[in-house]
Image (cartoon, rainbow, N blue to C red; front, side):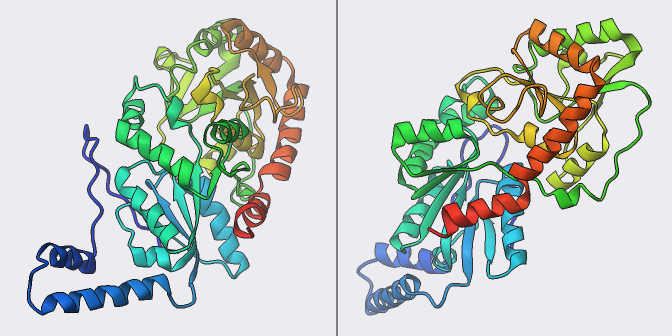
Length: 395
């Protein structure tokens, strides 16, 4: 497997570096523009036809899948690299990962299935067209609903750009298969675009976790959160956490990985560690933190409702008793009080739910045990691999 790292665009620019053309493509364009050249023109035409024939009828394919990704991002590691590497280990499956600025028609011709991941750049859409011209199967993998993302943040503004929005819709409309991690997102796409949508959740590689024994607690109740910036989702949770810290004093402390609400940054019972780890390092770190309770707040709106249940997978796999907003993302998977604890997404809902969990060590133990069993049954790497085989590659 080859992995080509993508260069980051300059800050503040919505323009991406144009796709680099091969020497052949540049020569072909130049030849076309000079159209009245002497006998060399016929030579170019003949060479062009021969090359097109070779691409349309390649030798026996060496790759089962070519992945064209929008970037080297966690979605690539969790949703594609993990199961594809496992398929490769089992034999008779080869794949390659390329970023959008490093793809040629030859690359596409050499693979049976072209898997696109979160692509929205107009320059990347030609790869889908090439794939269909060459008779290749196309799969568009998406784990966020960019059509419902508010343009009030830099990320939202990026995806709200009319050209990117239009390209996103074209990928949804024209890919042969759209693969999602969320049933809600799948229903949304099916209703609006009438495409073939395949749904199954991401995976956890338990082999990464079983090498690390749990650490010993010091008697405190530790409540933790891992993930990106979630100020809006934490808006009602922060006052509930303040009340919990005031109520229990030094008996409870908070740990944050990757993000901490600004209002809690300087609290004496709050610790914060920056992110930046790759996913394997991150999940191993989470497995050793030994949190008693893991936070998973999610405000209910169209964008959030289409998100994947990654907190549930990770907390369950790492034997952390999770407390979750009662949202469409978690509700289908959580048996309340058994595999997790569901709360209304309000200050009082979070305060009462946290207090119940803090004062019920037996319930926390039960949630840890049952959530791990549920995660192994539904989110193991083997289960995910079988989904890819039966729902996509065997079609």
